Image 1 (cartoon, chains in turn red, blue):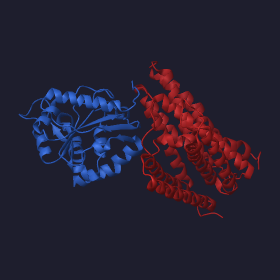
Image 2: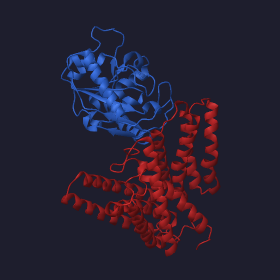
Image 3: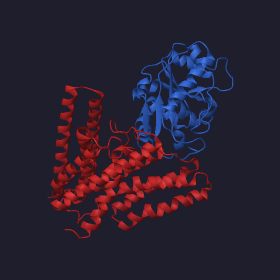
Image 4: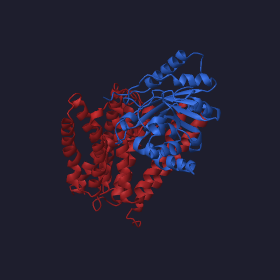
Length: 318
Length: 211
């Protein structure tokens, strides 16, 4: 059954479940706050409030229509890239090249929207990758060249290219399964975020052995494994409903999302630690900046998309 | 009429641009003045500085906010003068000792309960590099010793729109507001306190070089 815009009612049901979880989380935090108000519970409460906003914006973006969804995802990539560029050292002479880098965002998302797999895959990793160094060379300043070209290319890859895979999922129309491309996107994003919350919660409750002591000292093996198990179980339940994956494959997809999400999280932590900042920005109260929120997705989106592309969209697994 | 134009301009152009294209990380918002009279003192890197500072306040406060700007720069061209006076709401300052008391208009504005925005570096200068503050702000503080002086440090707008460029490149900016202080009796001490405050505020951020 489909709604007039081609959006599966399964997506709406899944969103309903997410809101039910959100209400439960709000109640739990409200009770915690009444029992023992502290800075920690206030912080938690700010986070949950921000979740209400983020989930509502995301819901509107994916239920309206595919163009709105893609524009929203492009805006997310833009904000992440802007945050990245604002944190790193840049050169004055590269201002125009940075502007061209921004202009590559709509192009990349148009390729995703039109489902042009070849252009989507080559535009940033080949064309922009070759454009930045020659543009900087012709600008003529060699001092700081390697740092400038390296940081700009890396930032474009981890923010714009990686996150644009979310938009690419929307184009997997006939192979996307019972809930369409929007179902796949919801599966990926909801599980990535759930994994973050589950890792955090398991880590707070049982965390002992540090997993990345020099990069992100709050991350523990207990949190990581608890998150992995929780995400795999939820994926096993949600997968057959939202994706073309049967239960065991859905569970594996959940595990892949959990592990790659963890990698994204600690990679952005290493980046922030190198620059000496705690949060990447102040856009989302209780969470930090947009990079702090989409860090897991930076790894999870390309890994999930390409796994789906290779095994599922191609028909190798059905 | 222009009063409404001003509110519309800020509500539908300035704020959305600052929110999406630029993005602000504001620290110490609680230190900003809630009522006038007050003097806001900020460093100056870009034309966007004024718009950003104005956007930190509720729209209803707009009529009371008066950025102080050089008459010789903003009032020479007719169109620019109309925009500066009516939409931005500047209080023009004559540079170069034309009047007997060049601060008379500023003092009058403070007496009306307005909030003045001052850039004591004089001009925007080299982006993302602080120049020495000029002493006019000390004379204004001496003339109205009860008025609180609010130091605000701004970073990043010089990257987005530096002097000499007409192309805006998106960058997030940081705005760090510090606790207000008052005139303490001597101009050199006042200037020193101001410089110390600004250096301290700048030190709260982790800013990478821009060269």
